[in-house]
Amino acid sequence: MHKKVKYALLVFAMTAMSAQVMAAGEKNYEGINLAEEYEHFSPKTLELLKRFDCIDCHRETNRKLGPSYHDVAERYRGKKTYKYHGFGSKFGSKGSTVEMPLIPGLVKKVQLGGKGDWYKRTPMPINDEMEQYTAEFTQIIKEILAIPAD
Image 1 (spheres, rainbow, N blue to C red):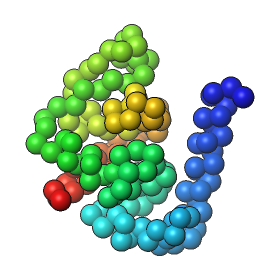
Image 2 (image 1 turned 45 degrees about the vertical axis):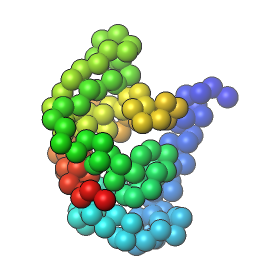
Image 3 (image 1 turned 60 degrees about the vertical axis):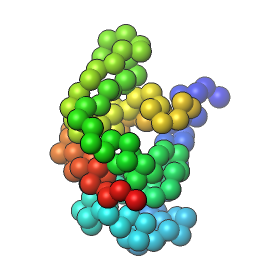
Image 4 (image 1 turned 90 degrees about the vertical axis):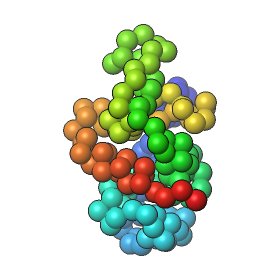
């Protein structure tokens, strides 16, 4: 099966599971109490995490497919800029890098995806190709970066 078809099927399955999370209430399909697991997030941001399927790949305290939000907060604590690598489509040739202010740079990474900054085999998928939800992703990023140090 073609890689793009496999990826599309995986994204579809994860989206379907996320819809089950919202229908099930406080626990997700793995039985995790979302209010407890994502204790540093406001109810509004927790709803955004569910809406954009972030909880399918990330946890607050433990790694899943992507890094935990605690690890993200720790990595960028005190930093002012982010080097966005992207997939090369909007930012020139493959392998090009654009240095941006931290929050807009991380928002861009979440929206447009990019090469794996954390794990070489797990790139961030595109979540908002038309960049319609900048305010929502900015809120999510700000709350992630506000998680206190361990």
